[in-house]
Length: 312
Image (tube, rainbow, N blue to C red; front, side):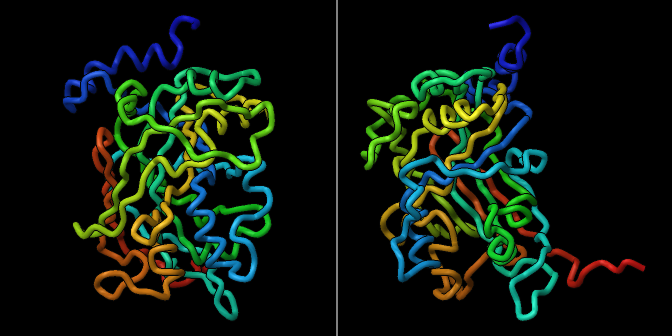
């Protein structure tokens, strides 16, 4: 690797950051150059399909053919815990209205952080060797805003306002004791995405709202491996760099208690959670946690914008 790469500069500072947090060997998070979020949690995709297309197969035909993703808003990736102001946008009322989202949600994800640049097509095994480590990720989502804007090109303002990640990168070596086989892929991936012996950590991922457990899912519910996701980007000509963040997509399990979002847990807001609420309310704190990753806590602050700003 050339001298003074982003990874070299990261390694120089890792010891100090690790000592402060008592996480020796773990890396401080690199500045995020690009952020891509995949949709590779297959049970989440199935759950969403059943909610929005109850009379059709839950998975769209392309799901098992290609790792689906959207390009996220890297500037609004925030590390650690904090407060997020309830975002505003155009809501799917009759007629459409502008105002604060009424359906603010979390998503439990894991993201790979690249440790080396990728400037040529590579296979999934090599792609995994280019991963520095992983972070826990909360992909906050304004479901009503997203619902109106995502067709046909995918989300924009429904996802762009804030994404939180855990404050240090957990190295791959720390996760090796948890590695287990991934679910089989049917039909098999195309040759350039073939990844024999795919493995992923079988690690529980938890969500709490104001200290009340609302879900526990698992990293093992990933359908497309992290290596396949990165290889897919490389074969399409995407230029990847150290520090780029590659999100897994929401990781839900096959049972209701393993749902990785309130969209699923409340069945699109029709089934209240504990306390009679559905989506996140102002003043609530959503906390995601997992072994080695610590916690991400996000408190919801009121918008302060009940109508569109005046042009006068």
